Length: 448
Image 1: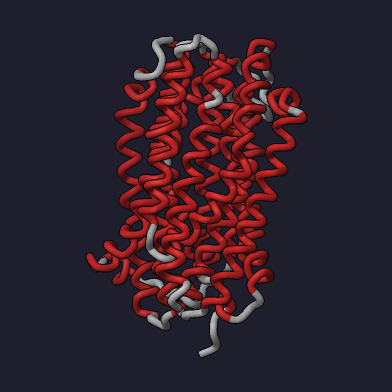
Image 2 (image 1 turned 135 degrees about the vertical axis):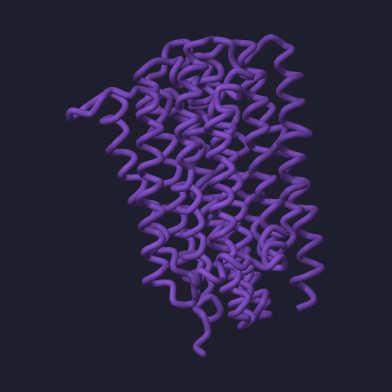
């Protein structure tokens, strides 16, 4: 059988071909929440705050879907590298069943828990109402999000990242078109307000999921799907998927805990401070998402060549990924330092928001290049089934360092001081990442 391109194509060319569509794809995913926030900000600052308060639970969906996808991706790519095609098929079919269960779980949470979740963060009735409405829609119709992510991961795991990009791009374009129409009531559509942003998002996700399904059935010939395989999961396969996936899920879920905690800390100052944090999170996704896309493109390359025992290809892939990640985050640092007010202006920033937001962007971005290096180092943890290292780094950064530092700095009474918690936390993350990376490299790569 002809060997997969991940074992034969020149490494830099391979990573570019694998990662570039993924980077564009992740940018498109970022557009979902960014576009929502841009249009919602023109309703009111309270509406923007409401979407920010909804973000931690919304991010939990992404964590569960993405983490499950990481587990499917790693098992499937490694099985293909080892020529164990029965295991790769089992990974794909079992992954579809797990995706359905994840979507069902969040449908229940969306229907019965949205209002209570928003109420834990703000007591203002107007913000509670808008936040609960937005959250109940995006959670209640989350089947599109979960299946979109899984179908894209299946395409990525066999090197078909161009088709994965097509799925993401279509969903983002649909969402962008529908957002102003459904939020402001254009072209004869009722004016839904914040609910319109949620409806536009889930419609875009559902369309992307259907396109992803069609592309997998037609183009992904290395995977064989069957209803029997989907409905007859093996505990061993589920265990292998979540052995890699659970640390990734927890790692991203910690991000939800962090944003929830930061919302609580910043709400002491004002809802505007919370809105600034929400805007920052949307803006930073334009730099972090491409790096995560690079990371997702590198993981199957590393996993395949680990299974095929090709040491030099692993080394070259890691060096190149590190260089590209740091360069992307360096560009983000320049933009945040040079034109912060202009970036905030996309979100209809008030004078108070500019006073809080300009120093926030300039302070937080100081840690960006370190963050890029940490993400690139983390790719080897996931590819070699050591995702718990990434989990430890994430816990150390966001829970052990960031939130306590932010709380302590908030006691100064200055919201500007709170933003320094981010560079402090990233330094701790860098130290841990280097320690774990060197340990794993000596244990796994050097002995090959």
